Image (cartoon, each protein chain N blue to C red):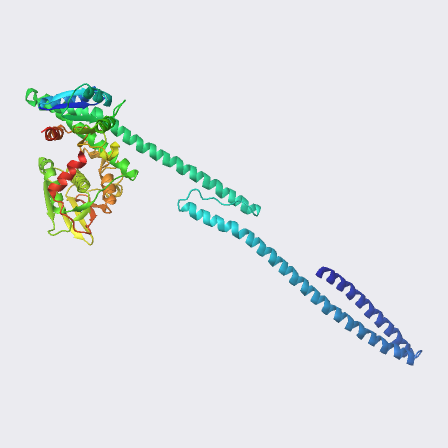
Length: 397
Length: 119
């Protein structure tokens, strides 16, 4: 419309210019006649007439110019409105698919692997939707594969641990039978049987550790916490460990703050952690070293520390020490009898209690392991050493 | 002296159990699976204690014990399991079981428990 208007306006402008030029020509001819004196009154009338004619033409063209400007403005406005309408249509046809994508991506990230979007609308958003759905599909399948692998792994560990126990029972049982008749064995035979038994115990420890880890991976590390007194628990563990440390000429001391509140734990599991920490301190420290176990309150937690003045752990190893199959200084592996799983399990156990475990060390000066456990909220019946011993028996049975 | 009926699908473990229990002065009868336990009892064996492996082919110790309990038997029974926790042994909570023994067997403890249950 505006274009037609502008075209017509140009044509009119051309006509106007022509008419004005013609008018001037006519006027010039009339003025020449007046100058030469060939025409008088009549030529003067022509001059006036032509001036009027041009005024009229100018009025006409200026009206047309205004109309055309209006027309052009209206055209532009209409075009702009159209563009805006088109654009807002485009925006709204983009918005819904985009909102869906954002929503689905959020759900996917939050773990809902079944999140998908409706594919439709513009070809660009449809392509995007399709790509998203393909990605989500792959994620979902990947997740399922991983879950299946985890399940197979757990099942394998459980089965392997189970199947290995029967032959192990026989080996250990018959070796023990031999030891029952120790007096009829030569010293070398007795020593041989001791080695068999030692290794049986090591295998059992490894199997138990593997089982604990598989359980903690599967989220099945069952903890039955009860209000437990700290001092008898620590004393009991220290008493059990003393034979080993004394054999290496190591001093094992304990310092439990008096009046500690009871902690909310399964005593046998805490015993397991402490035995593990003291065993590590014992095995990694040289003969004559000192090992200290202490306990104190820190806020709503009780902190039990096991420190030694052994060789210490270099910083780069300290970071990884709670990972499974990680051990301090590989050079010691031969002498140290652990499974490389103890600290990983201790960490899982501490966390299953809502507690934590950490380590600090200075090479050449020793290491300190800190176990923090929550204080029992309701002061329950005091679970003394004897009671937790009973718990241990029930658990082992 | 008590008569103990031991069931395990491993001959080696049966031999080990028999040796240790006999050394402690008990009389021992053995069975290779749960069905044999039921058969022996049906044929007149009157054990003072059952020592049953939780998992055996043909009939498990748990299934055999369930049948015995359903028939009204109150013979004390220990379940021997390769699992560390009773929870892993799929042990039913509604079944009267007098204790769990885990493999590898701690014989000092087993003999104590046997003495208590047959006293």
